[in-house]
Length: 637
Image (cartoon, rainbow, N blue to C red; front, top):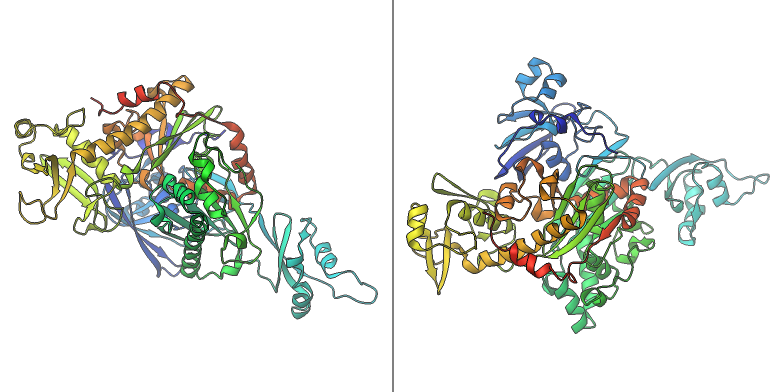
């Protein structure tokens, strides 16, 4: 059981926020001589700690306590912006240091943009902090042993492989033919001073000299839309580079069902989809290695967290049974896979770990997320929601864990929205209405080109809040609009027989050409999506036998969920009606879980154990699903 920290027991230690908006954290990573080695600006939701934001984006900050404010190692300096010191800051720093801007990164939560200096790492951690406040013992499967061997003589004619393994007494190695081919040449060229490389017990290579400092792995979140790769130093557990790109399978459809359909209609599509997934992973592999200056041949293991369809497409396994009832996977847990078998250009005998799947629509990405967020450890009642086209939901209290999947559709990806765009430069991502004024935030602060998923949720929540959308989801009449929101009433117009609300004017007020607007149909699309998700967690609560008020924490995960305003999510009924302080942006927990299985063999076994610990609840055969879905369509009063 995880100990509850002082930070959780004393709410005064965590600054309050209203659950809305985004902030920019500008990091400068310093060398020991105080020179700047790198700079990175990150946009995160209000309430995310500087420590979490840095960790999710490959910025290493010292910590051994898992971000609970007890080790006092995550020292950073606020160089621009105002961050009030917490009680723990006063215990960690002198009064002079406090005035200079020194703070504990895990307690830096602000509602305004700030700049942060990150000092160089001063410790070589034996534990790595990953996930949502999770700490793992650093014991990766990849091991290196440097040995200096006695040369053979007429009196000592042991074989090369026996001589090598005799010198390594803590690993009972096994060698394949491919791994043995280089042993005679490398041993003699290096004067019998070599490094042996193992993954678990498998001997995969012999390298001349001492190469123990070079030991890397890559964790991938293989998403349907976005794929993320994190390069890890397996000696320290620290991330060295993080990159993300769109999944190259996109031309075959935005969701897994259309990609499965493609393989059913065209026998050649499976091979093409498999190749595109491999190309995506390979491009990311090259990018993270180049950024960190790492030789790909020193990457000895990778871990992949993806849903069941993405996994089978990557491996070239026919996904058709996943798309039709009764929705059967080829396998829940795949055997050992060589990275070369899936076309990843790293060490030729590197291993690939495919995280196991619970069901056709609760895949390895959710197992990874449950692992990273400690759903099997934390004794609080917590709700985990990975928001996306197919929304996965997990409810647990450490003893009992339930999971389900809800077909939310493409609204959160903005695919079915009239002015919808992906979360890229110029997309409207935040919307607030303050004192009758519409305040819009775009990605990179560039002119608006459309609206992405988080902006859609904000827009509907804000319009419900001021009364321009009624609780059924219908735009109010012009007369009511002038009464409840006179400064915004002129934005409600008719376009091609449909009511729309104009978010940005491109030319002049009243001119709808090239403007960004929200349609009545867009609102309905969001209602369908949020109702599916809300029905999912409501049914899990019913199965669990608890009320939504008993939930102590809600984790919003995934690339969309992490940038969703908690206040807006509550307002539209996407999540239970709780205090915003109980709603946490959990980041890319699928990627965090993949990192964990690379850093700790124990956590790898934990991921497999979750298959037995989580009970899957199928919604499609519930007789009461449709009635409960209809009940959740309206916006809460």
